[in-house]
Length: 315
Image 1: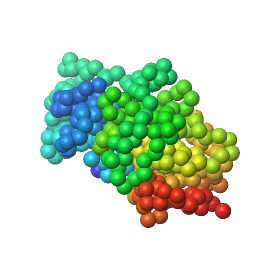
Image 2 (image 1 turned 45 degrees about the vertical axis):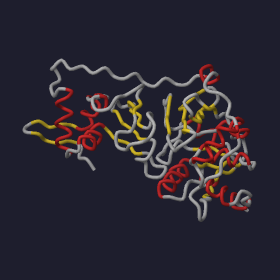
Image 3 (image 1 turned 60 degrees about the vertical axis):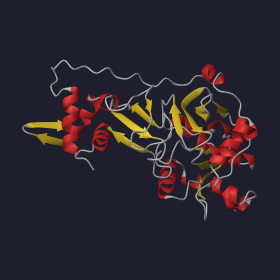
Image 4 (image 1 turned 30 degrees about the vertical axis):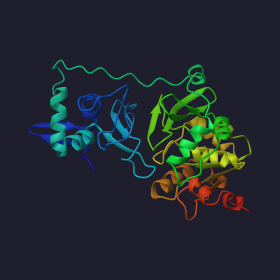
């Protein structure tokens, strides 16, 4: 873990201040960003939007790989210091020195960084014109790229609001009514993800389906939501296993359910994510029903397409 500051000569450098003052420059000077996206610089052979740079509310900047740098469902992120350290292959002290050299170390040295414009939220009007309806050929491509998981039908995906883009991504919106939090996508032909219009990482996919007094299942994948939908269940999904918070209005909607079944992936990241969700909810509403002998709902449905409802319910 990085220490909060480091002493160079007689000058004390505050890491938190440095991360905010450096802005996006340490990323932009090393990789070619296109609307905040780039191919991930730490692995080869994936799409051109596997790495995303985001300005956080405190002014600091993080980079995230949505593909192979992730550990299971946990997304791999870098702040400016860890990014320069890993990209330049240098120790922390040298990474800090290089960042200071790039942005200027004095408050009056004339260096002024333009803060990157915050992400714009998706709107209903734009979303309605985005992409096209999912067709069976899209589903066939998607199924071929995930042989160990069940794949929902085009009819189901369309019913849940999925769309297919011209770039070959299956996209969906995390929204509550007309309020959008993020648009997520997965390439149809391989495990290559994107996030757009990311104004919040705290939404839940399909939260509008939750009604007062219903049972709802919390999973880690939008496709798992669709698989459960095909079997008559109401389900919502976290954005990733690294999610630890939920927007207040989304959480209030979730709390209207009678029972909330937490069905995260069976790995450590999934367990930690569901632990965090459980802490936000009244204990009497929460039931832990992790999949047994499989990684997630998609794998369960592939191995046992007619899995018994007893696995998903409490007597």
